[in-house]
Every structure is written in structure tokens, then in C-alpha cells.
Length: 418
Image (tube, rainbow, N blue to C red; front, top):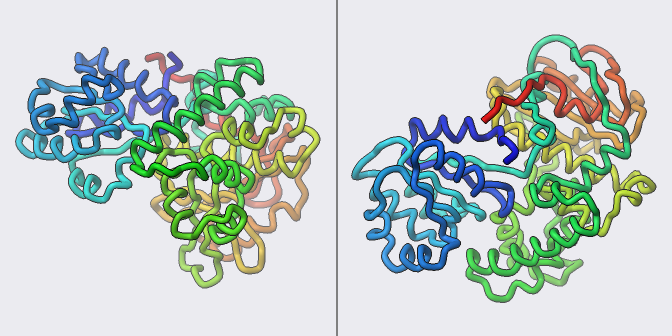
């Protein structure tokens, strides 16, 4: 088992919260992590992938929960969402920390009744595919370092262009990472998407006709890292807007796609409000686009899209365990100037991040960062261009170009053994 950096936060939540929900896409390692926590804490483990357990939970949710003694893990709870209301009743009768560790491959918080019922009783945590630091045995500290004071102090060991492309195409699903050959990894992605878009989605969405969903996901893959234009996607696929919105929510609920909201602050009137769209894993992205590593070498525009999605995914993973609590956004003004990714901490400080799929950086590549610094001089903390070069290069006060590998090297420490 590859140690997961989120494990510490799960254990901390169990120490003071009655219900902890460990959610994330299927096959990211939720069950493995939950079993490890169960074994270490003498916690009973039950999975709703077991048909007998599932039948019992659905037949009598209240009786099923009442029969559970001591702390328990309930794996794949989205298969019986009716259990969550029964858990709420049980917690209200005996409010003890760590009673229930739930896992779910579909975001049950999309169900308003469930979210309202467990408000104040449950802490949701999202486990994403493996981060680059987890793969290399180090705990990333990029977000914390970016909000620290002073210039970047980094002796990077930059990943070369070919290595970076390999990381993008590999993604972070443990089973896909373990397969060294591209064709075998492709076979895994085929089987994975067939399962998720077939059985899983149909089960939690209660919608029978989902034949357009694979085409929609492939179309969204081609638009990853771009502004989400629902009307344009609907025209391309011939899907009504109302149906398309429902399908998109299904993909988001299954942790396959993720909207990146536009940052507004007090500049709302000058910003384009549309979110950006990212697939949550670049291995899935490359597979859906039919992109082999060699093609990314020769098509820089395609590499730029994939690399921006890669950086967004890595930052999303790190935000789950960083000491600095921050939100992730994008910035785009009506003038067309933009910043690919924007971190805002709870004090309102801003760190802008541009992603460039080139080995050099020019002054014009920092136009969006300079605009942000000019508009919000008191809140602007740092601007970073992540690129495929090897050096940390200053471009003025609080502006630097850094290798993409800084994501898992800057501020990193050796991961503690678990």
C-alpha cells in the first residue's frame, strides 16, 4: 500500500466527529485506506459491494444501523443512501466521535436531504488519485511554500519533458500507475470507464438511458482546461440544455469532471463568470483523447491543455492536506488577460499560477499575473509560472518562473511511515 497523505486528516476527523465521509472516484484507494484505518483502530469493516450486506441495508436501514456495535466502516455507502438518514438518527441518540467512517464513490452531498440531515454531524473528505509526492514518498508542501514569505528557495531536480509527459499520460489511479505498458494501461481505462459509466452511474443516478454519457465525457475531455460552454457542448452533441446539465451533474457527482470557478473578489463586473472545466485525472484525459506519449511531444497545444489539467489536479490533491486552507479558482478579465489557476487563502491573499508547456518563459507570459498584482497589490502575494524548464528564474518582485516539478519538490518533506 502506498501511504496516503490524507490518512492523518481522516484519523483527526474521527477523533472529534461522529461521521466521517471518505469520498472519491472509484478505484482511487478509498477501500484500501478505510481497511487500514479499520485494522489499526479495531473498527468493524462492512462493504455494500457485498450483495447480502446491501440487501440487508436496503430492506431495513434503521434496523441495520441499530445492529451495528462499536465504531464501523461502511464502504460504498452511495449504494444505499437511505442508510444516511438512519445514521443521523443513531448519532443524535448517542453522539460519540468516530462512530461511522463511510466511503462513497459518488458524492452523496449532491442529495440535499442527506446533506441537510448530516450537517454538523459529518465531515466529508475527498480522496483523489495518487499525487506525485505520494508516488515518490514525499509529502508535498507547495501550497504552504507559495503562501510563505520570501523568494523561492529551491534546488529543483526538474523532470525532463519526456518524463513529465509520461506522468501526465499515467495519471494517478493506483491500478493504472502499476501498469508500465501503455496498451495494458489503456485496457484498464477501458474497463474502468465501462464500469463507472455503466453500472455505477446508472445505479446512483436512477436514469436508464445514459447512452450519450460516454460521448459527452469524451467531448468534455477535448475541452478540458477551457471555459465551460454548456450551450456549445449541447449543440455539438444534439443534447437539450436541461438534459446536458443533468448529465454533467452525474459526471461531477462521480468525480470524473470538476468545474473550476472564476475568482471574483470585488472585481465581479470585470470578470467572465463561466467556470473552467477539468477532468480529474490526466490518465483518463489522455485515454479519452487517444493520446499516446509521442503525440504530446509533437503537439504543444495539446500538451498545454493536458499540463494545465495536470497542475490543477495536483493542486486539488495538495489542498486536502496543506496547512494553508485555500480555495482554487481561475481568473479571466474581459480584456482577455487571464491566470490559469488562482489560490486564495482565508486571509484573502492571492497566489496566481500560469502553466506553460515550453522550456522557456518570456515576459509576456506574465501579463495576467501582472494585471492581478496591479489590481490587487495588497492581496497579491506571489505569481508563479510553472514551465518545462530547469531553473527558478525571477521576473520581478514576487514573480518567478519555476519547473513544474516544483509542485512536488518545493517545501516537500519525507512522508512519514504509516
